[in-house]
Amino acid sequence: MRIGRCPILTITLLACLTTSHVSAKQPNFLILLADDLGYSDLGCYGSDIATPNLDALASNGLRFTQFYNTARCWPTRTSLLTGYYPQQVGRDALPNVPGGGQGKRPSWAKLLPEYLHDLGYRSYHSGKWHIDRPAIVQGFDRSYTMDDHDRYFNPKNHSLDGKRLEPIPAGTDYYQTTAIASHAIDCLKEHASEHAGIPFFQYVAFTSPHFPLQAPAKDIAKYSGKYKQGWDTTRQARMNRLTSLGLVQTKLSLLEPEIGPPYDFPKQIAELGPGEVNRELAWDSLSTAQRAFQAAKMEVHAAMIDRMDQEIGRIIDQVKSMDAIHDTVILFLSDNGASAEIMIRGDGNDPAAAPGSAESYLCLGPGWSSAANAPFRRHKTWVHEGGISTPLIVHWPAGVAAQGQLCGQVGHVIDIAPTLMELAGGALPNNELAAGQPVPPGMSLASILDAPETLTPRTLWWLHEGNRAIRVGQHKLVAAKNESWQLYDLEMDRAESNDLATQQPETLDQLKALWEKQTSEMERQVTR
Image 1 (cartoon, helix red, strand yellow):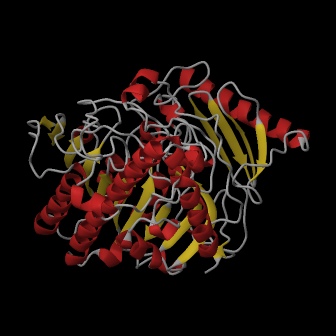
Image 2: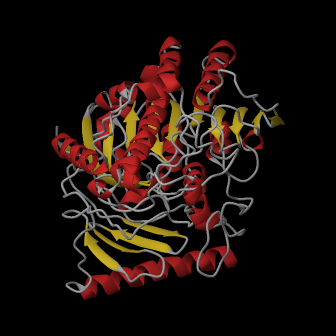
């Protein structure tokens, strides 16, 4: 299995496709978004977790090896549905301009379903939202919105088509991942019954495997004892599979014992008991109690992903039953890498409760997050590869000819909206309006190239909570908050282990100047 060398800058991620994707018929769109899923958390990306439905999509579609997000949940969701960097639309901060999860987009920053509506699409949303203003007033015809991110079994804050629903009582068979998929299936059934012949956009935003680690007991039981060997062994095993699959050509990053959760909650960590570990320590340095506690957490993480894959299988079966699988573009991706966060929210954590049950509140933590993000460094919120590089699977029988192959083209979530718009027969606004709308920074991933083996460099930019980076071609300049810039050659070293800053000072200065120029330009755009 070879990696397709597909152009990157002004053309397309789906350069690995043939001209068969050009069709007079508008395709349907199905976006499947995971939350806090790491690069190697799927079977088809080297995992030990059972994901047969996603693996099947990959074997009949494309897997991208260098696809990026914004390092955090709400900025990625904003970029996904607008085609802009979140800083451009007030949903993340710039050095001199506030923004974030409570930020409000300007009126010109419409969402993808609003544009698709004008092209004849009906749009449906199921799951997490985390974008300003309700989904139902921004182009979605139906929406089941999950605003309770602290409870998988008995959420208290969820709504249907903009109307608040009653809390789910404890002790029912409700499970959030299943409920999100069931709503998506209901929407698709309704679409087939009442709107046959009209293309659909179905956006399914799972909360899994975001903390708290909670899953049905039968799913957890499948992984009993699976991770007692620890994260060191798991990381190496995943690395070996990634290499054999051709997904990476790098060495495994080293654990960083000094790196803990991005936010410090020492009292909560103490409350979790002596089994909790808030650093990337060698597994053999842990106590027997710590190993048992940590292994149990990873069993739940695996179960959450397993259950999500099962629910994705149900959604795909529904699309097949509509005889729509051939003409439906299915995208699977994650909003950021796995999380090193450790905290307690919601109803608290009962230390006597079974790990993964509704009464427990556990987080993956930095040790297992390093395994989930293997072979890369760092975690969610950082803009090292572990925080921003995650899977992208594209399945579309009518348009993807290079089925089962890998594509090494660099892409970003800002590219999804322009891609879908082009495939639907439209385009995002691409001129600076009097109201101050900037040109969308992404590129369509749908173009067909005459020379798909030719790589063309691309520039991508990041900033989140002081963590910053820029990638230009094979070089990446990156710095954690309050730390100095580091320079890496990602073609040789995606593990970011060999800092070239002192060896290539001219390249460092050039990329630093580009990062500062782009940052200043964004500040100019949003403040004029």
